[in-house]
Length: 280
Length: 193
Image 1 (tube, one colour):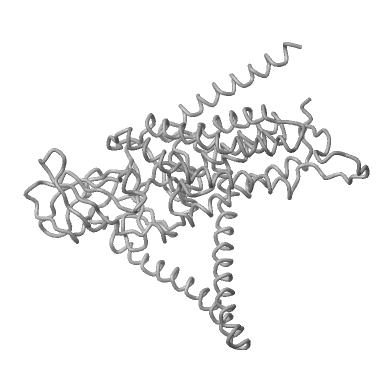
Image 2: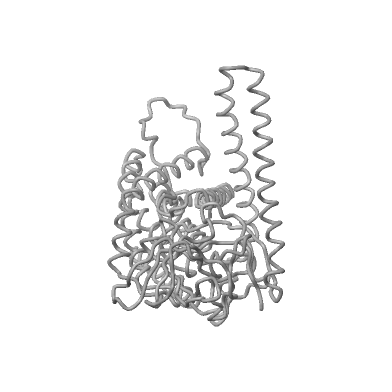
C-alpha cells in the first residue's frame, strides 16, 4: 500500500523537473517551445475578440438603457426614440473612431517608407505584477520573429511609441509597454538641438501612466512641455517616434544630471489598436 | 478516466474564465484590480473536486496564465499544479467545510502568490532592465495587497458560482428528504479513490 503514495510523489517530482526544464528552455531566444502556445492562440484569439466586441456592445446598450430610464419619466415616446438614436450613435461613434484610427494609420507607411507596418489589436493587458506583458494578435506569421539582437517597435495609430515586442509565437506576440519598469531606451528632445537622454518605465510612476527620463545633461535646455522622441540609437526603434511630454524636471540624486517625469504620448487607457514596425 | 462531460465542462470553465480575465484586463487599467480568476480556478477545483482534478486544472490554468501574459513558459504551469495539489488537501466530504476552506484559503493563496510574484520580479528582471530597488518592489506589492485580497475572494466565489451553475456531475434528484444538508458523500470527479 505504501507504493502508491511513493509513485505519486515520484510523478510530481518528475513533472516539476520537466517544468523547470521547460522554463529554462523557454528562456532561450527564438525557442521552439514558444510554438507550444500557437494552437491555443488560433482558438483563443477570435473568441477573445468576440468577447471584447460583446462587452463593448453590452456596455453601450446599458448606457443607452440607463439614459432612457431618465427620459421615460418625462416622455415615454421620446424615451424610446432617443434610446434608439443613442444606441445607433454609440455604434457609429465606435465605428467612426476605428475608422479614424485606421485612416491615421494609413499615414504610417509614408513616415516609415523602409518598414512594413502590421496592424493588430491588444488581446489582453497585464494580469499581475509578473504576468505583465500585453498580448497582441500579431505573431510570427506576420513576420514578427524576435531574436536576442532583434526586436520590434510597437506604435499607436498616431505613431506614438507603445513599447517593444518581447516574444512571439505563430499567432500572437507579447509587448513590453513603455510604462513598464523593464523598459528603457535612448531618446532625445524634439527639435534641432536634440539633447540626448534615456527614457525608462518606473515602478512608482506606472500606475499613474507616467514614465521617467534621466541622464539629461545639467546644461541642457529643457523645459516642462518639451516633447521627447526616440533617438534611433540601439536599432530597435526608428528615430523620431514621439514618446511623451515633460511634466516635471528635477535634479538627479548625484547632482550631476537632470531627471524628468514624462507623460507618454500614447493613452494606454484607451489603447486597443497597435501597429508593429517590421524591417528597416 | 474522466467522462466526456467533465472534459468538455473543464475546457468551458478554462476558456470562460480566461476570456473574462482577458476582457477585464482591458477594461481595468491597474493589474492589481483585475480579479485573478485563473489563480482561483485550481484552488476551487482542488478543494471541491479533489486531487486529480485540482492537479489537471492547475496545470491547464497555469498554462493559460503563461500564454496570456507570462514572461516565460512554465512557471504558471508549475505554480498552478502545486496550487491544485495543495488545495486538494482541503477536500472534504462535507460541503460546509469546503465552503469554509474556500473562504479561508482564497486570501491565504492571494498573499502567498503575491509574495512569490514579488520574489520572481526580483530574481527575473527583463533583459536591459534598469536596476530597481528591491524595497520598492516589495512596497508596491504590500500596497496592492488589500485590494487584491478583496477582489480575489470575490473571484473565488465567482468561480464557485460557475461550478455550481454548471456542475461537473449531473445533479441527482433527491428522493429521500431525510438526507442531511451536506448532501452526503461526494467523490472525486475523476473517481480517483
